Length: 413
Image (cartoon, rainbow, N blue to C red; front, side):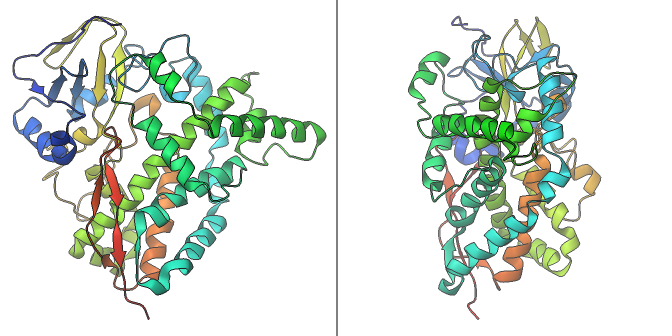
């Protein structure tokens, strides 16, 4: 996989997705790509192509036998003999895992955590409400999704939010880094999470066997006991699910929460509509997902020689499916750079912030639930909520688009 697979193509934009120029101005760049009539890009530094066309992206992702995940969702080629889960595997392996995840991630299961989630949010706000200001990103957006996923694992977070935050940033930050995958893995120690998950898995197996735990005790026991067509997840796969969910189940929701409230505070007329009519909260979340998609995109590789728009691709070429770019496609979303709650909800829901096709995010409903509780609670508890200082962009994880610091203020009554 070391030989150069891509090259500049006439009319196709040349982009460096790791550059400061792209990270600070990607929306304007996407707008120019769409305006040119050729929403495709080539990256010489990363040796890959990218597609921001909603039509071409969604059409490609309805062909999972052509557009494969076997080499992983990042820029580097994941070895085929290296086990992955969900977004890193193809059918029939993916079909089985998706069924297991579907059973584990039921709406009823997510809803059962609402009282704990609400209590956590209220307790967190109790801790800083009297101060009249806080970095909302660090205090809630980062900590809340981690609390939720660890509650589901059945593992106490025990004040280690900073540790896991750093571990997630280290792993996700490498997704757009060129180089050798095995070298990257050797430097990615996961010193905290791997032993912790292994110890917890072993303990859950013992407690299931002794009858101390029921199958529905936590997410791990649900994975251990979920059976589809007579097949169960291996221990290795369960460990893979844990590592995947630690990042995918928290980092993207973290970005959604901060992007959502920052967007609404930056659009006071739209925020006023939500406060006057809370039934608009679901639409406010979907429109924030559309215009501020947490993930720029993930990679697929074509299993055979093919064409994609103006691109002619040899087999196993890395192509970045730009969720964030497709969400700004003016052929689908009128005036796409405008945040508007007057849009047709059916049109807004055509966004691909959670991906598309068989690999669509299995935790999307949980992210939406967390965002709903977050927004409802902030509106109820923090009067005259407003931006209280310089908002800083997150630049350490180029594949994601989000906020690093979000100082907010409110009236203390």
